[in-house]
Image 1 (cartoon, rainbow, N blue to C red):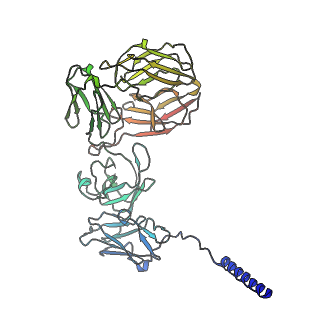
Image 2 (cartoon, rainbow, N blue to C red):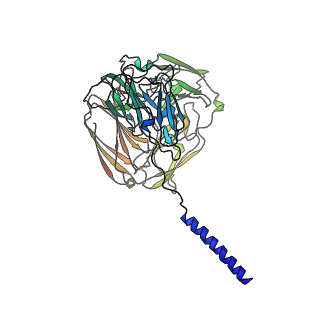
Length: 531
């Protein structure tokens, strides 16, 4: 029995050993397939044909493939009038022209498949493959290349459709498909191959509806003049794309606040002109982002009439504001609106939910948070009447508490506050830094807007007009990373304007320059040249 058990144990060990060896000898898999599929030329429609008349193009692959979003990936230039049928038949990609499609005579066509054709196992794309043919006796061979960037940010624009029109009529870009088309890549670069010698109008749009036309309102870039394409000439076109200002309209009217109206627009209402039938002292308004905010006083009037004029459309929006009863008003309260620097030389701003008209400084108490002695200060209603300035000889690296006793503040209607208390810090001068700006090479016939940017927020704005050089100290800045954005303000409206295609006006130019990080108690010199 002992010999049998030993023999059985030996047999089991031998089987386990063999299985282990078998596992070690079995391959775990080969290297990952990173090769894109290839076209078998002898089994496919011949590329670069002339006098092409076929309605079908076949591309047979050396492996199983799939089609990925062919509607958006496959780009035909010149664009077709009818959508082609693109499908798989075994390992063959079949491109069928619509039965009603009529190809242009004597034209070179390019079918760029983008990354629509991918192998089935790893998704490796047959990238940038183009099928080219001509309906005439020869294939055009000229190339036009370029780059497209956002006009304001300078970032490259991907998937913009660049279109070249041989019809030079003003309405062609709105009504017709172009003769050539291409799309920009991730880096904003693009090229159109197999171009004929001719004169073209060239534009680029974000063609979201894929209709190969310019629809007003779409982001656009364009050449100021026509492009003459000739042999032995290189073309490298740089576009600045922007979205035209859409027609402004009032989106919402909110009168839920006490004697307050908030008008929300689809964009910043810069051009809206404000008039009122009421006494100017009975109404106050502010422009803020997309809003127009109005506060108005009963003054025994049942309503206030606003006249909001759009000078471009010559339209007047008339609004009747019904006054609310005095007993329904909430007390004055704090509201965040302005950012305080915390520098010992700067005033402290405190903002409220309604415009201020009067204050009683005898009912305002200011002292250090840890102290008992009251601090003398000057209190002034700011130009933004919903805010109050507090000026005092601040101690560096200290904390203060200001208390507004009842009836310390009065709004436009003569209503006052309950007790309001605010605690705030003041830093030391050595916690801040300065930027010494020197700008030159400006056109003295043009105005400029210089913006100091930190974390995508405008910290300082400077307007320069009729000067070729400019110097300024930007002081009391918190440490951090800044950039300098300079805008060419051609029409002197103190804001950036996008393109106006109808008037062939390019977007105002923007140059952004990075600044070395600003440290505490440090000065950074910035030299900027407009180019």
